[in-house]
Image (cartoon, rainbow, N blue to C red):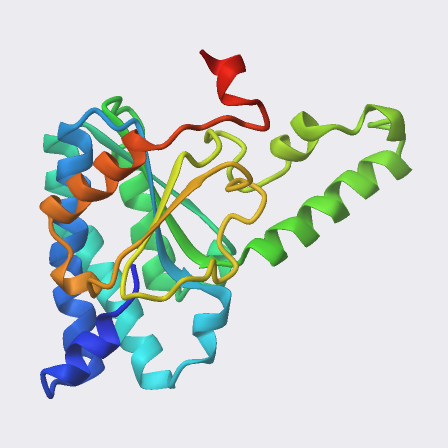
Amino acid sequence: MDGNGRWAKQKGFLRSIGHENGTKSVRETVETAAELGIENLTLYAFSTENWNRPKLEVKTLMKLLVSSLKKEIKTLQKHDIRLTAIGCLESLPKKAHSELLEVIDKTKGNKRMCLTLALSYGSREELINTVKEISLKVKNNIISLENIDESVINEHLYTQNLPDVDLLIRTSGEQRISNFLLWQIAYAEFYFTKVLWPDFTKDHLYEAIIEYQKRERRFGKTSEQLH
């Protein structure tokens, strides 16, 4: 969800105003995804690198996270959406962490869609932790070296309960991954749009999905094999 700061700058606002307006796009995207029958939606909300931003902006983002969780719980319950989160959640401020866990608990029984927030998330950190956990189990003879395969790695990732990514959408015109789900997007389709996140609407989501539907996903096979 990229472009909040640039959106604000273009309009002569503080960056915080851009982040606040970005929450409207979050709500519309989440509701639209649920209506379309999408079962899993992951939003890259705050990366491990984002901690390096100015302290005031980080503080504002954390306050916005808390207020948004409080406001949106009714929407999540209304649309039968379960909230989960991935990342180094313990590094979040105490209040934000507590509010997050509370909403996760209150929505755990919802079935329509799983909404995952990537918070204090970095894919390299995730992979390092995964390697450490598996190495420790090998050392303690819990897992044999010969039995390590994709499924074992998947079981030790933050996303162990989620499927691989089908479609990755990035707003604002930037065309890079930015340390996001590097293992999980191995065969994802990428969609880049110049639209800044606060301007991203359900029509833009439709456009991304329609473009995705036009693509042939071969997973290493030939077109003839698929048909």
